[in-house]
Image (cartoon, rainbow, N blue to C red; front, side, top):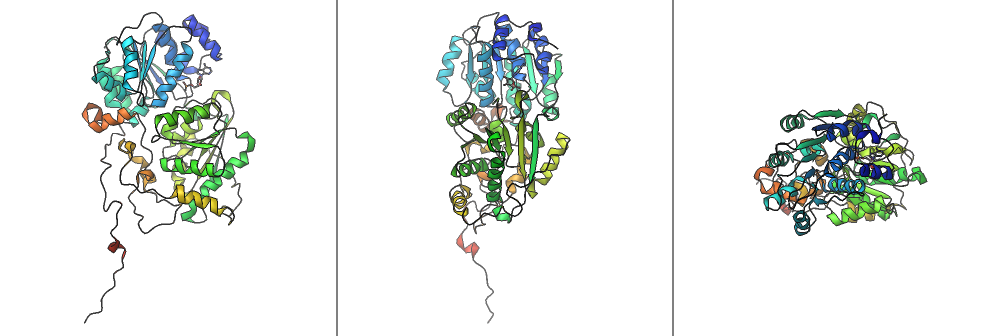
Length: 508
Ligand code: AMP
């Protein structure tokens, strides 16, 4: 088996690795580090959780340790699809560079340009950025990219989903032709293949097993759940979730609870809090400082339940998560793999429990097909038919329903709702809100909260798309810039006469 000491890494990097407690390189590290150190391009096909961040940061640091940063001219560049991922890469850099004097700047939305400019002006060894924010800095003339020797594209398939491929192509055009490229993607969609063929030169290709096939230490289970009444489905699902959590007892030290839609992330978190569970939401519409606070608390073990959307949780590295609950079956089967991969990390045991309602059975079949095994069916901890709320419990849930569950009807779309998203999400958006009694004004047009969360990006990346321009021409899979401010039909307002019934007046 390869050892870190066989890999020609800088001794100070080796020291930091040993202090981090890593004993041996993971397969992606053993495969990617040697060619990266030789200066070759690398195409890594690997998901988060495989150790891929260190597979590019360790050789980069070893190379950067040899030179010095120059004002406004970063020597290396790491592009990440989301702020969280960028922040995580930055943390990795801090861990591995603690015995070296290397500087970095994190260019993400939610941080003032001024602060970032000051760092860039001083000169940084590595810039870690989301694509839109990087181009914003470049366009303001604050950044010179002609000294970039190594460029990393992390989670390229997410970039594609989020419509960032045009930005990436543009950035490839701004860095020197002779740079080294380390390119990572969990999957190789045709568009990703095209980019790698265009911009990588004879890369060393390292592919590691999909997480779906390596998650033996995660116990999985699904509860096939049918509500007593369609209009009580969401309420009863939340009750079932609480029962599933309770059934795990103390074994559930902490958990991430995934919902497909932002609205449900909020509702589930509020409902859990009402029932005295220590829970907080995280999704793309919450402001950055709140997201950071919530995540930090969860990482520190001060928050037990993190209720999350896929995008907000993508790539998050929280080393010890005992449970993942899928409140909804994800509409993309691959998201199931990402979600359950939050638990059972680094050889620990983990448990992943999902609730599947009849509407989600087709998505569930896709999940089972992808993971190539039958996910064991669980018994309803509430017993058969007991999901109907008892009279004594109704008021609290009712309160949650009135304050949290009612579909909020707003005219203005959320800031993020113009981010592109795959059309495949649409069926979720069409699903009627089931946990509140239908009201006369309920219309089939989805409210912003009913739309599944668009792939969440940096605000600067969203702004860039909104402005159009090169970055706005979304050619990626999700490149579908819809005018979400359009009011369809009557919008939120139904003139009262429409609800009147018509009676035929007797003739004569
Ligand atoms: P990543 O796939 O980069 O998100 O890494 C997943 C987790 O594995 C992180 O918590 C890393 O700190 C950890 N990790 C990375 N490399 C190793 C290694 N060689 N041995 C043990 N843990 C590692």
